[in-house]
Image 1: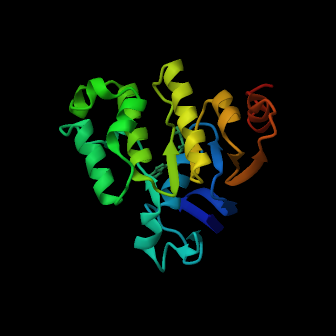
Image 2: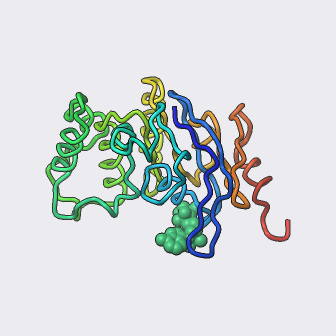
Length: 228
Ligand SMILES: Nc1ncnc2c1ncn2[C@@H]1O[C@H](COP(=O)(O)OP(=O)(O)OP(=O)(O)O)[C@@H](O)[C@H]1O
């Protein structure tokens, strides 16, 4: 369980969040939704200690980020984007590295096969398309076997079949008890996969349970078009 208590953050004089508090249970998928530049990536970075937070702000399964930083981070996987993959290393290198560092028991080959990555498993990252790199990122998440996964716009650049595959993977991870926080602009996908959606607005967070409602309408409620 991820517990966030009274989280505030500003970049110099730009306040991004004020007094956020929320909990994410094991086996829950939470969507992070907001217009460009609101703070989705910033929130993910805060949750994994890449940006500073208060002493008692973050706890993962009872472990405080401040008091038990290494133990906290071992339970979590986050890679901001496929731009951060090593250009001159292969897909295999990345997956082998993650398996070793996270001491994971997840076998690499079945993941590569199930995600349709066999054809480019031995290629270097710089020779892959955006969609292929998104697959590499997802494979890294699966192989990490981390309890909590923070995933930033995973569906960017994916074809419709791949979007369906990714959604299936998210639901499989949820069924294994993983917690996923997924930032996304794709409201139909958010509606199909998320248990809760955090709409970020005015430096705070509106927690909406997914009861099967049309998430695009909820989005328009929080973020009406100019002149509407
Ligand atoms: N390192 C930084 N230094 C200063 N300001 C930053 C920094 N990173 C982000 N910002 C600002 O913080 C705000 C939130 O940015 P963030 O990247 O978290 O938004 P986002 O919701 O993820 O956007 P997008 O949907 O476009 O990816 C923006 O106004 C951005 O300019």
